Image (cartoon, rainbow, N blue to C red):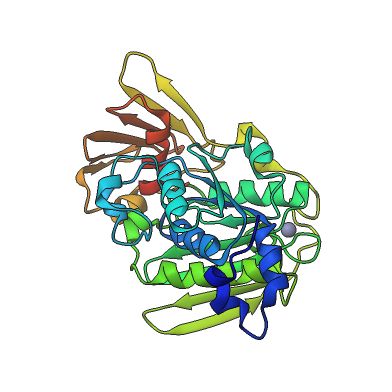
Length: 338
Ligand SMILES: [Zn+2]
């Protein structure tokens, strides 16, 4: 594929760039997991910089509430799958870039097949379960990845090459129980933090693909409201279940969320197979602005749009008003966490 010097002129003329880095980007294949606020920014910067092939994966459809913080979606895209909409938009921005669009959940059955063959994985997901899954794939198959997350006014990012430094489970050894962490749908997010974190993530991706100045094991956190950028070096944990013991818990389907359409009920059950119990009172506090919220010892009920959600202490939820398992999983991830 010929490299357009005119298109990339302003980066090629930088003293640390040159034609060689441009050639490396053009020959690179990366996968971006998630096409939300982080994903659309990250994909846009990767494509504009000239990364040759970008696979994008997202299970969701564009909603009006995404538009305040996503850089590639228009009002006319509402209701369309995010991944194919991103492909369409990138084709209009840089036709030299090949985009593969996958509208699906990354799960233990397909993760290895989807992620292998890429030079680098960029995490732009909104949930921890998928991050643990990416991490297990990264360690098992030797694929580097860049963790990134945003919530409220904060974002964080860390470069991970498991053989060279700590992995995600060295940093967060145990998956927190569902419902204990805020999500962007319960705590919110300012629209200026995702582009900052995407910028850091893509800069690091370019450094990795260019084989220049890429360092692992440093967790950076930026609070855009406070204007504070802080960093901490993370140690590799020799006893880490993933990179130490090489036990890939999240690639084993039975520990992961299962979803069952409830025949004849217009409802879907989500079971996260939690080890402990949920603190329903605490979750109710996070969800206090939602409609018809009721909490008791045994369960929590609330309504979102036209869906009723009934959540049990063991983490199971029934989403009434749909038989669409993907939609039900999305509602669970957004309001309850994972
Ligand atoms: Zn580890």
